[in-house]
Amino acid sequence: MAKLVELKNFSDQRGNLCVLESFQIDFGIKRLFYIYQVDHSSRGGHRHKETYQAVICIQGSCKIYNNDGKGKKEVFELDSPSKCLLIGPADWHIMFDFMPDAILLVAASHNYNENDYIHERYEGDSFSFS
Image (cartoon, rainbow, N blue to C red; front, side, top):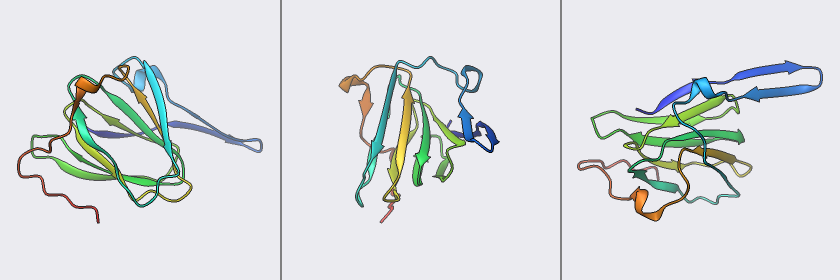
């Protein structure tokens, strides 16, 4: 289900304004968080029972591996603040290859709940980012 969407970007001599609007996502946002100053580690490594996410690298870049559990496996590169990756609950994902200045913003459909996380990979998934 993971899908990359291009956000509207308005530019003029004053700078850029990038917009994520409700019609671009299928969920209401209940939680925002961001990941930054990541060393050579990966982040994520899970999927959810209920939570949908919209992920934007607002500075720098990173990559996200996604496995939808139905045979579709893909690596997305978020290298522009106008790219937004929509991740569904069934999408097992791992974020990696962060640039030193990367800031990854995540908008989530649900508040944090430890019981919503499924850390086990799908059977047969052997993706390695190292």
